[in-house]
Amino acid sequence: MYQSCAIIFIWSITFKEKQMNTIMKVFKDKRLKLTPQRIAVYEYLLDTREHPSAEVIYTSLQEKFPTMSLATVYKSLKTLVEVNLISEINLGEGNFRYDSTIADHPHIQCIHCNKVEDIMDVPMTMINREIVKYTDYKVLTSKLYFYGICNKCKIQES
Image (cartoon, rainbow, N blue to C red):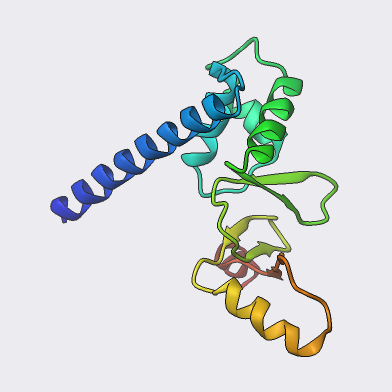
């Protein structure tokens, strides 16, 4: 038990170090300034499986960065999306959510609590190849969202 926890912990540290090296390289290559605020926003997204909005990120970082404005969070997110380090998700809620997993993958959202989760084992490339049978378009990319009721909300409904 402890050995598997240690392995997961070491893997997560190694993964995070690799991602931090990536952000430093990308910003250097693009000649962008890597500010503590941009790093904080990126680290926050790396450390969560949630898909937070800018407002949630702002609120979460306020204690550590009390002078950081919501505008700074938005600008940091915009830059991170532009350099392809994070992805922007539009679930039709009137605001965007953000995801540190940039590989194409579907999402599922609970219609009660609005929780959003990744669905990682669905090969989007296969779906993109299959869809061409039904259209004359050249499929470049896709976004796939599912909606349902999460386990926590199902239990509360019972």
